[in-house]
Image 1 (cartoon, rainbow, N blue to C red):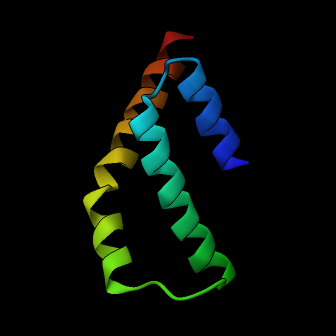
Image 2 (image 1 turned 90 degrees about the vertical axis):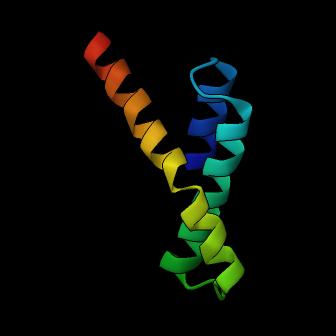
Length: 69
């Protein structure tokens, strides 16, 4: 699962524990939206928007890892 991937990256010191937790939260919201599990509140949207930089940082890390190979 996505959560497992982030946990492994945290364990391998590729991302921080704080990054992992924020990415887990963002994935949770993705699941709510894509599978229609429930409602997203305005508070949820504010949290997601404030943490979008975490996704950008994750993409940057992945690009660096790919370019190392």
